[in-house]
Amino acid sequence: VLKSGERVRYIGIDAPGESESFFKEAKEANREMVEGKKITLEYDMEKQDKWGRTLAYVWVDTFLVNAGLIRKGLAWVYSHRPNLKYRDYFCFLQRQAREEKIGVWSKAVPEKEEYYLGNKRSFRFHRPNCKYALQMAERNKVVFKTREQALDSCYSPCKKCNP
Image (tube, rainbow, N blue to C red; front, side):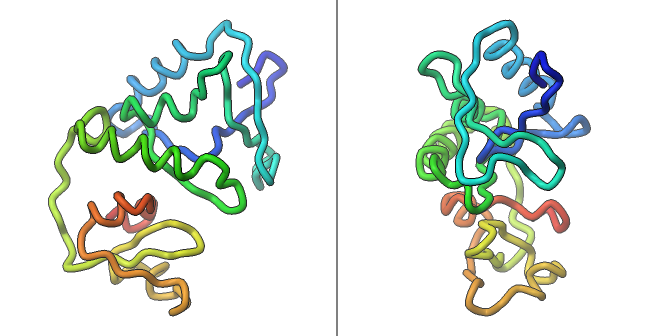
């Protein structure tokens, strides 16, 4: 939230919610990176989301805060068309954080499915029986053998079926 009261949604990332592990760490890291500092907002193709929040990449000097949170393992890539400018860079940083098992990636998640279905349009992956997987157009489907394969391909887990 800016001094003006304007709400900014960081483009390309999602972070743990209040009830999730690493929420406090992510909130504190973000506060340390931006509080009281002069920030610059960089916009992509869409400037606002459907809730009226400003969508932006947040810079402090030459430091991209969105990327910093991913690299620390305190956020994950959450791609949303058409705002994909830094997607490849964010994916690279997420792979590094996952390999190092830091932050949200430090917790092991056992495989629960034989395969997962990804959506090429939304960059989300689902359990095979998820209602969103069942509704997906064939042309948008991609099959991942493991959850890790989906994450390595920079797909985000569905918020409903939570693969």
